Image (cartoon, rainbow, N blue to C red; front, side, top):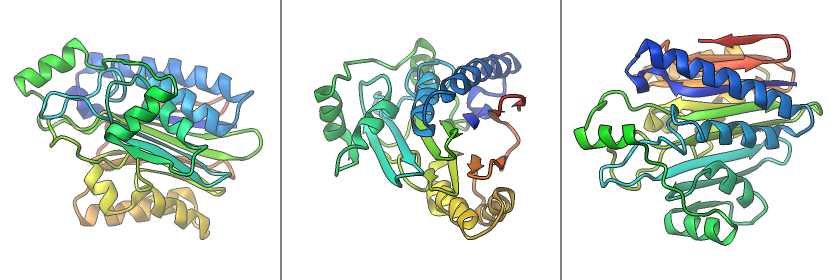
Length: 280
């Protein structure tokens, strides 16, 4: 059993050392809780659990504390992929909910598994997800003053390998901030969140770059075709560099290989397999 999580790029917090330490502490606590949860739950259930905790923490750009779009509203996107069943589900630009990853989880049982906007919100309300305002005082101040224009690359994610050898990936984002209303990020697409029986990957960074390179799907496909996770990720990042892309990934294979890589060395992440805990 193994698990790895990320909290987006450190640049999203202006590289403030105090904030970095706080994020690392939060990741440590969330990782420990999620690994404990994994002992008696599936990879899919654990991925949702971990991302929900990340969404609930104000330091990360997902759920509570998400970035505000140019019209003053927060729109959230999240997705879940079960490597065993190969079912992908997600919500795009959903408003006024606390945990979009849990809405994505609920959608996994339906034929129509990716919903956007008003349809996603209607589904959430019908299934007991009540109104929640994710805007924090800090995010509101940033919006009003239009700060952090160059540092908007935050997402959270979790990849888990359970006791039965099955994988899952979950990713959630509050967007990049000040973007066009209803802009679609990579987080609720297979470019940013993908899993099968061989590997699972969650991405963070510039959504358009991740979509342009089909990053998560490409890495998992290469592992499926026989590459190691490290080799698959490095090759995919060479292709990312060709378009001057900005991204970070976390991943696990069914064989237990855990790997992370970022195009800029300040993605915050943590991994745990029962004895090893690492932060960056």
